[in-house]
Image (tube, rainbow, N blue to C red; front, side):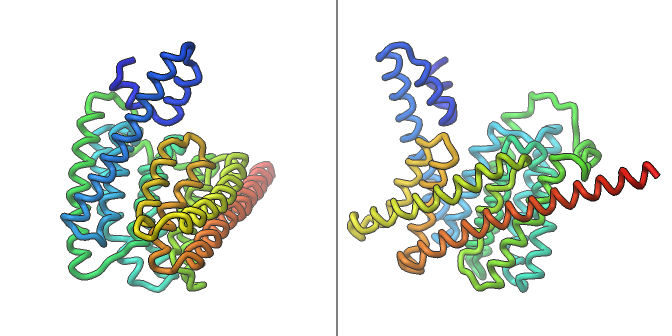
Length: 354
């Protein structure tokens, strides 16, 4: 494996190489590559988002985050169908992420929930057909970030331009990297494979319904940063209940630990570098291969931004409440949904037997 190829590995792959190292020299080499990868990734991410902020305004820096996320994921990940059709779907996804979150913010929480359900249905049914590729962590997360950091007027006009540029970049990179791959399935197959009795479709429906409902409830309760609850719910909803229980535990414990660590840093560090605590969190995520530790460090960036608006105590309280509410509601929703579907299946079997 070349130096460049090793740089392309994810955290788990790099740490696996470290475990398999047989000599100190070999281990030192893999550590060096790993550190270089983290440094290069952080520098590139910082530069990319900074450029978007300069071009489209600081209030649209989140656009740079969403576009960067899509570029980094879809340069390797696919949608499981013909490359040309996948590229057109990606363009459609950008249109949805640009328009629907903004419109949903103009409506009442209930009407906004209905629009969010319709938008997420397209993103998840056609973009998240393989739950184990975790495309929902890109598409749904991007949607929720743009929903939570909505803008109006001139800023929204600039957002339209920024998202159009992001769509062009993502589609170009995606098509270039996947054009030579052969796929046996197409868009029609995705539609035909929709089956309410399958684990995959039930998982998709839970995502489509639960995340907007969580957002709606948080907004009806006048809780700021409702997107935090939506993101927590999205990350907890998995096809298998055992995995969901694991995610819920790790999300709650990880966020509480992250809040504690952030609070300690907040009091230890001078106020002039509070903004850089988010960067520390980004570095921590880069070193984390396990979901629990990622939850810890992801908290840093969110709190660094929220503390400027709500103060430390307000930001910390919101973070804990929103995340606990999001994952617990998601778990309860899925348990009830799966129970209802199992009862429906039993009743259908009895009817057919008669």
